[in-house]
Length: 322
Image 1 (cartoon, helix red, strand yellow):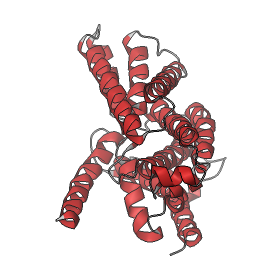
Image 2 (tube, rainbow, N blue to C red):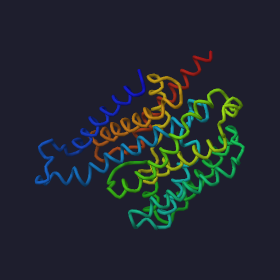
Image 3 (tube, helix red, strand yellow):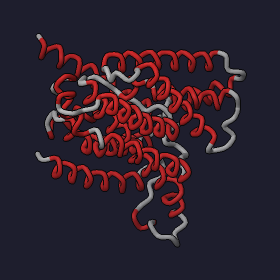
Image 4 (cartoon, rainbow, N blue to C red):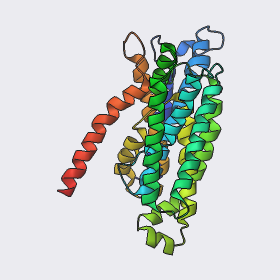
């Protein structure tokens, strides 16, 4: 199937899922309440609509980042978390909770974005200007490990049980109680990151032939590395700042998309963004609709989906190599 046709189908599915997202929840809001004169309209306009828009933005950011990473590292198991950007953003947010700075709705996202930016800078300094994929991947693993360790340290020495509860709850990832302020923070950052990733499409295609072949075709590997770091960093940093850590979207969606549009990296970028938006929308609807005492955290739901998917992927790769 062509990329354009598949993308159109995904857009139509997103529209249908968005309508379901506005209706579904602990309290179902029917279509006849979608009027400004109906008091139930406030539930739609102020609670569910920003949550739905944010799910689309974050899902698209995670799916696009996963496709870009897998194309850049030429590894189908690559995940945006490998860069360490999500761990750095999480560390920034955890520090704001640890020191009690998150009294304003904008402080925690600001700390998370600062953590993501600091991680990007450290990653760029460690990787250098060589453009080497091996050095870059190792630098990402190091940064992720250090940031994860510091986050665990902050949890273990938190001053009060309340701070521990806040930190752990936030790290689980969710779209609960999100507002238009979160949308205004995430949208421009994800948009800029998406533009940077889109600029790498042709270079990623050339990189499938190998680094030497890509250089001979005029690809500046150092520039490509900066675009990938900046684009993925902005997308993941904004996502973590708005909703906490939500994993496996960037791993799962590109694999599902690749079965339809083929393995060319540039062909998977747009469908992966749309597929990520659709997946996160449906997962968020399921979290709200499941009849539990408290709402299931979105990060936990994605882990429950992503874990078995990862195991199935490893088993499939092992069979293909046997």
